[in-house]
Length: 464
Picture 1 (cartoon, one colour):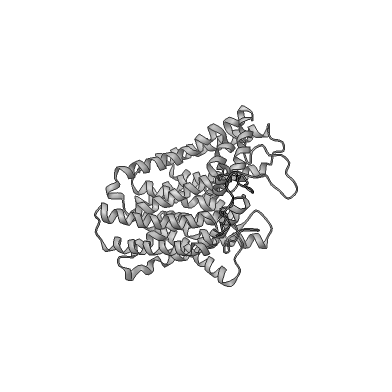
Picture 2 (cartoon, rainbow, N blue to C red):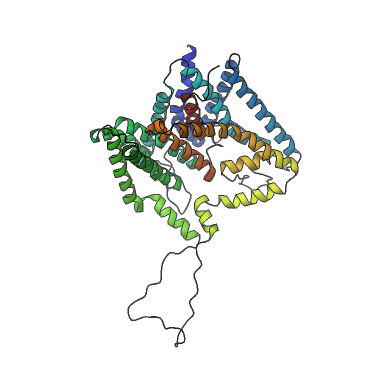
């Protein structure tokens, strides 16, 4: 096998992600162990990526720079372990290392895929077209799995009580929800590229299939992801058609299709699982939107008249209730973690408290818990120095691309750039609010691939 084909396999690996996740679910139910198929395959991929980085660093200055960064990251983690071994009691080393592995996966894959894409582009490989193809295959597999699981009645439940939702044959509901939200804009991109007339609107069918799976999840992420993507296509089409004067049949057809799908989504909202789940959540918070009904002939007595009762002012919805609706109790864990962090020794404040903060011996059957808001978990787990080191590549890549996009907005305001941008922003937003993106290898590979591909496509990472 030649060098180019090996590089192509690193990109094609994206299409295999849902298959790996289904096999992971099967291994969990068949063998009660944390060492699942997904863990082994993704660990092998990470090791292969590290090996590639080291090999390319012989001739590439960029690869050497990335390698030095990863060595520095290993040093930061080593200091974190040394600090917390002397502070935390008990200290669960396996849990700590497992968490660190999940975090650094994003960095290794981001830097590794950047080199892979750079090498492939230098060999005239269509990096954007192939990435779109593999994302589309991944999304289609996920959508089909959801449909088949629902039809056969074999879908796993997303909630243990009160709320309704399903995860198909995927074990981790939060992770598959984040994956679907990131992949959905690329499914829409496929639809927009193929639809140059209403007769070819069938190209949106894979988008619809994946959307049905997202609605079945019963989560705010799933519903919100569909709405954001449809509105992005709708308003993007309007801007391209009437402001940027890009008068093509492709834009007009996609404008009509996205408008129809948006209306359909609004119409079916009351019968979707997320609608009922939101009311269940609201009820659990003690919020009641019902107004008292006044019947004819039963007017209440005025002040000073017999039988007058002074009305009790109903409290407004509190800020805490709004936060709970958005973050699903994550804000409470954040407050506890924040108190622990700023009362911890200076070493922990600089290099972090590690996995789940300064946990105590858990009750039987329970394990220490993260906040599940990725950027917050990064900060409290790695401290000021560690957090800045972790976030540096993310900010550099994203910031450099954003500046480039704004500077070239007249030529870059197309379905391709808009929808890849939406995919990245959805992934980042979910990482901030619901987590399970930058700390979940099954999800972070998608975000890393998007960022790496865009940087190389626009020559923001140059060859030596």
